[in-house]
Length: 182
Image 1 (cartoon, rainbow, N blue to C red):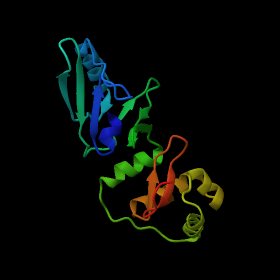
Image 2 (cartoon, rainbow, N blue to C red; image 1 turned 30 degrees about the vertical axis):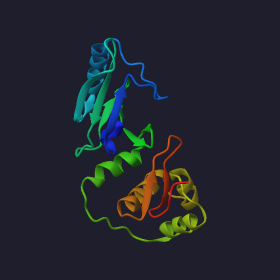
Image 3 (cartoon, rainbow, N blue to C red; image 1 turned 90 degrees about the vertical axis):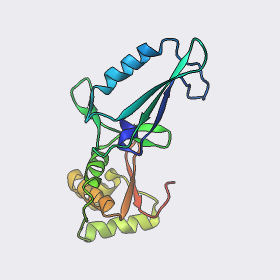
């Protein structure tokens, strides 16, 4: 649900299989209780609408409509007490990288972003003329920049509308804004 709130919102159906079969829930109150306990760990709290949908006399589906948040990014604390945030990419929820979390947070500020176009940015543009995307690791190798500095440059270029980020479990992909993911 955090991923939906951090992205564009969405609907979660509990009692519907990934293969789109509808086995339903025999004890939906128990499932709802567990989900509501998990929701209580989200910060800031999520705006969620819960609807119980009967599918027959013994089974129900629970529909959760999660609204896109204006207070992004949302996160939960994991068992080690670390913040974990997620984003939605197609039909998957993916753990948000540090870069993605900062982009989400700073996009809400809606300020004009400026950046200096120097040798590192030029090397990036040359790389993206040849390759469809670049990862943070590839950018640090290409430029020799320290990871934090390279990260900040990529974030700034995303916020300025030059690049876009495609969150990926193996590492975010950065590509030209007008380019399609591939």
